[in-house]
Length: 64
Image (cartoon, rainbow, N blue to C red; front, side):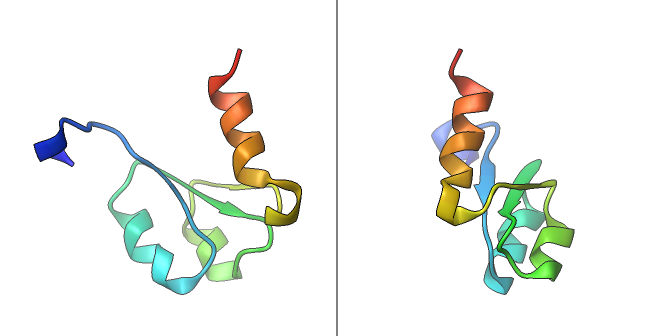
């Protein structure tokens, strides 16, 4: 990240292998359909993937 000049990353994940990605980031989000241990390791739980939880999160966060 530093080599690219990136200072902040937001992660999204729903299964066990995403937990290691969550550990290295300030913000991590799991959709409501994620495994329980992934939701527990996330900063917050967002909407289900079927209802476009990630795109809805991004719209609320960045679109004015």
